Length: 321
Ligand SMILES: Cc1cc2nc3c(=O)[nH]c(=O)nc-3n(C[C@H](O)[C@H](O)[C@H](O)COP(=O)(O)OP(=O)(O)OC[C@H]3O[C@@H](n4cnc5c(N)ncnc54)[C@H](O)[C@@H]3O)c2cc1C
Image 1 (cartoon, rainbow, N blue to C red):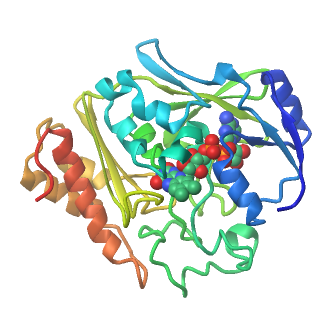
Image 2: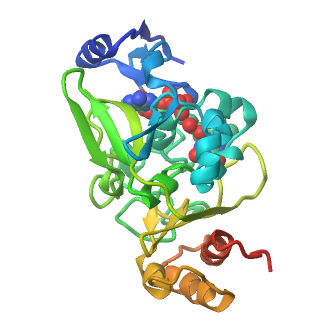
Image 3: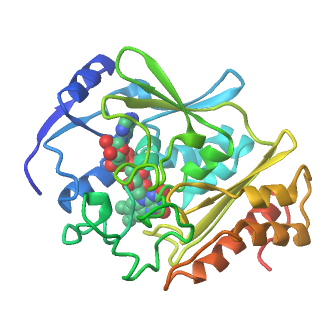
C-alpha cells in the first residue's frame, strides 16, 4: 500500500475544507482501503469522518425515516422501527458480508462502494473503467457480470441496500459544507452508457449526510440467492414493495445499477395480493430484456426466481417451492 496523508474531520466545515484540498472520505474504510491496497484507488489524502457523530443514527421525521450517513449495516439490521415498518430494508443487510464487516460498514459507504468486477479490481487489467480500451468481461469469464447490457462495461451494482432505497424513492441528502443538496436515488446511479468511470452523481466536493425515506411501504420483502451464506455478495436479489396501489420491483446484483423491473410491475398492476401464477408471470416479464453473456445465463433463472419469491414473500406466502 502506498503511503497517504490522513486527517480527521470534526464537523461539516472541516470536512468541506478537506474535500476542497482533494482529500477522499473514509467512513468504515472497508471498500476504500481494499481499493487502496489493490492500488486501484490512488488517493494521496484520506479524511476520516467517523468522529462526526451527528451523521449517525436512525430517526423518525416528517412521516418518514432519516438514516444518518454513518449508520452501520448492523445498526440498520437491528433497528426495531425499520423491522416493523419496512422489514425488507434490514433484511437486505442482515446477512451481507460478515458480522465484523457489518459492524463497521456504513450505509453511505455501502451505496458508494465500487464495483466488484474481478477485472476492475485487479491492477493488471487496465479495463474501460480505468481508462483502458476493453471490457475484459466480453471475451473473458463473465460469470458475475451484468445480464442486462447498459453500455460497453458490464459491471453489476454491488450494494445490497441500494435496491430497497430505490424501491421507496429515498432522497440522498448531501452537503458541500454550505448548502444541503438532495438527490432522488431513482436517478442517482449512473449506467456505463451515462458515464464509464463513475457509478453515481455525487461530486467530489460533496458528502452524504443522511438518507431520507419519505414513506414506509405497506408491504415489503427482500430475497437473495448467494453461492455461500457469508463473506459474499449475492448472485441475484430482489426487493418488492407495495404502497399507494403500486408495486416497486427492484432487481439487484444483475445490472450496472439497481434495476427497476417495470415490465414486471406492469404485470402485477394495482393488485395488492399476488398469487403464485401472477408472481410467475411477473418474474418472466422481469427477465424478458435480459441478455446474458457466455457464462452467466444461469443468473437469468436466478433473477426470475428472486422476483417471484419476493412478490410472494411480500404477500406473506410460502415462496420456496
Ligand atoms: C467479505 C466482504 C463481503 C461483502 N459482502 C457484501 C454484500 O453482500 N453486500 C453488500 O452490499 N456489500 C458487501 N460488502 C461491501 C461492504 O458492505 C462495503 O464495502 C461497505 O458497506 C462500505 O462501507 P464503508 O463505510 O466501509 O465505506 P468506505 O470504504 O469508507 O467508503 C466507500 C466509498 O464511499 C465514500 N464515502 C463513504 N461515506 C461517504 C459519505 N458520507 N459521503 C461521501 N462519500 C462517502 C468513500 O469516499 C469511498 O469512495 C462486502 C465486503 C466484504 C469485505
